[in-house]
Image 1: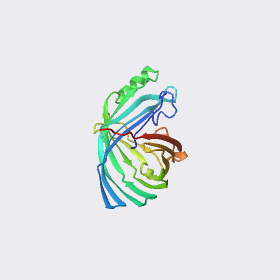
Image 2: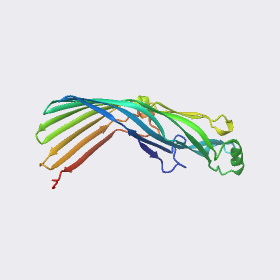
Image 3: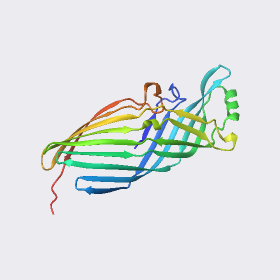
Image 4: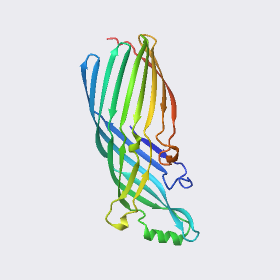
Amino acid sequence: PFGLVTEWQTPATFPGRYISTKAALRVVDVNPTLGWQVTPNFGIGIGAIARFSDVILERRVPGVNPFTQQVQDIGAIKIESDLENAVGWNLGILHRYNNSFSWGLSYRSKVKVDYAGDARLTQVSTGNAQLDAVLRSRLPFGADLPVETEIEFPDQASLGFAFALSPNLVLETDANWTGWKTFDETPINFVSTDPTQRLPNSLITSNWDDAMNYRAGLRWTTSATTQWRFGYVYDETPQPEEAVSPLLPDSDRNGITIGYGHTGAIKT
């Protein structure tokens, strides 16, 4: 969950390059879960979430050229974390009311991951040899700078319903809430005690809103061995217009899905 890569193809000329030229987040969950069938029609599940994640952030560094009084690129910074881990939990219930209707509810907790890694600052030529030499004497180009950051992954809740419209036709729907307000700030803290091996700390502000997404799926059993599946998805963006940035640009999304299943006879 939550894995993504956003990379801009022309970092040297991209207008948002001082905010982000690449953001890559890898997330893998290990989620052992215990289910208890309380009655033939009602069950409860509870589980632990072990989340493993790392992150890469890249952007250009601006500076004012004293000879031209223009802002231009003086460096490119890449922040790369180690593989870190954190824990959370999930629970859910499932109730089969009768042969024609069932429903389920699930919740997945917030998980906060603290990342540690290194940042590397690479010099970008300004075209002025004298200025480049001054910058090399003042900035830690080419060194691994210890850095820390954190991401609080949002909690999620889902409510789903299944309707048997006929013996061969089942409609499933669900609504999903994600608490994206949790993802409000991402600090970038340089932690070396050596002032020559650090840069000023920064704070990436997101200002996202909680968001909903909706799913509908139709399962059509055409024979004892075949099924067709059709679906529709609608995702609300958590980003209000005033908070859209090059780091994680997003918008509302619509999608359709189609699937086919076949069960063959097994001969022994």
